[in-house]
Image 1 (tube, rainbow, N blue to C red):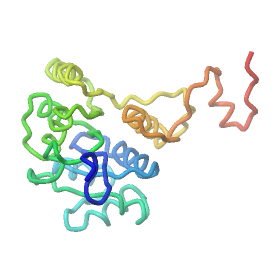
Image 2: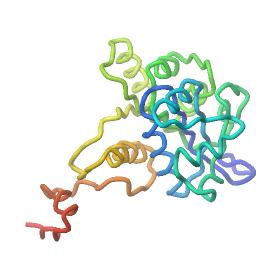
Image 3: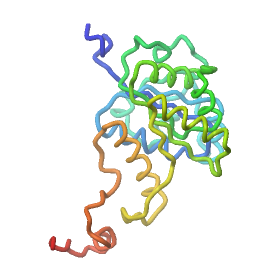
Image 4: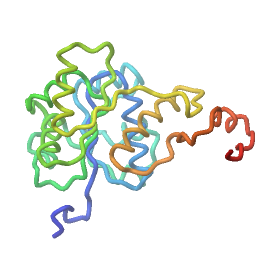
Amino acid sequence: MDQERDSTGRRPWIVGVSGASGTPYAAAVLRGLLDAGEHVDLVVSRAARLTLIDETGIAFRDAHWRDDLAVWTELDADALARVRYWAPGDLGAGPASGSYPAKGMVVVPASTASVAGIAIGLSKDLLQRAADVTLKERRPLVLVPRETPLTGTTLRHLVRLDDAGAVILPASPAFYAGAQDVRRLVDFVAGKALDSLGVAHTLYRRWDGELGGARREEAGEPKRPPR
């Protein structure tokens, strides 16, 4: 068997959702990965479930995770068939081992508690353990912190993770892509996370050097010829 794939041919991206505010970012990353035809292993922390209910009114239950995920992400059954869910307390799960075939991991949103746990190798739950495994196996790890302002302690943890090879990608949307609503701002951050993973997407309009190009595109105006 190919050491980089399991017996079914899967080699997923691991998506960890922690308890920080920002569950729409997680949904957008999941949509982007699945729209790109990727496989996903999902870990939703216990704290994240409380945040999800607070921000969206959607419950996330172990026994009904597929139905709840469909409501949360608005994805169809074909896309969700490529998702495998692992309970956050399952430290015997596949992603807890370096021999488990995975492409890498994104933690979105990344709470300061999860950042601290990953930085010091605490591995108190599957999300932290999977991130630690991702680092030790030298696979891509993207962390999307959203909290602001940040304490010196959290900043030091983030620097430590950057030194270890992780990509620190704050949930800081840009406005040059012509976003006119919250969802497109969310998609910009999700798109930057997918860029860091090397996954193709069309979540945002890329800068092409044309000032005001996004506004003109929104208005249906023709693109200006290059000078």
